[in-house]
Length: 421
Image (cartoon, rainbow, N blue to C red; front, side):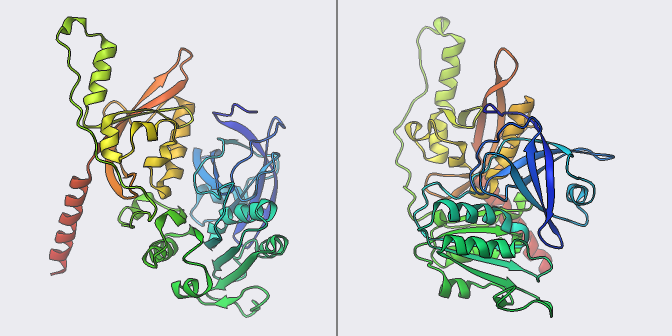
């Protein structure tokens, strides 16, 4: 099945416990056809029909390398998690679920050349397993460090598998931290270091000047190591991370621009579209005139999310010229930790033909500029549909509201200080 753009029925083939709280689910298409080869680190979007709860959407990372036959997800059982409890307690081999194609940009490139350091906490290990499997299969000359943090052996998933992969790869050093090891957990067998991972450990044991860092885990873990690595001088272009949690919690993270980011170039002055004989102006020409002279960004993308229209306003807001932007993925203007949720919504909108953000409704999100810095933007979208009613493209009208965002942030800070006083 090559044209996979909507919900596709899959069956759970088998369940395998990985720890006391994490279980792996092997998934095959109901029709028995092959599955597209995903990139290590990507995720799947699911639609679960849970009795008494209705249909619920969730994202889960693919925890295995591509094989063309099946996908594997590894899910932590959350005490209050409707879907995770249902998967662990009720779902069984033969259970049907609906799946969207692999997506996401937290991934190991096909042509990785720099050393890699994998940092994971808890269930954040899942994308790292897919990456390590790919490393052992296709990047045998690459140097890697695999560093994982867990509470103890009862919740530590994939321990033996990681050791086997490291041995197979031959160039991977594995270090496991247990923050509270049990009496039956043996140092040197089950884990390597008691306590918590620190920046000092990374400074002494990983190549800060050369490596790409892949970080995944809960919010405190990310805040400690994403910002910590940046402060240690690691360019943000070499810090890749995926966030499991509300994206709003990362909005106040102010990271410096990537060291190798190219500064924006000065823009040539462009005046509005003019024509003497207004009676001869067609609707198409009026549309082009408005798009060309608008101070807001007007960005259109095809069904796959590649940019097909980029107006001067977009160049002013994001810094990329039209030539640089056309044909590129929308990822060039989306900060990395927000891409997963963006693509989940994008693919769902393309499949359903409906969006929550239209008819003047505005969505406020962070944007990414060419120089590596972030701005605050608001946007609304228009769906472009073909004769069959399917979404063929999306047009976003985007406004830079960074000044307003910063003013509101400062006001909140002042109010908080007054309350403390």
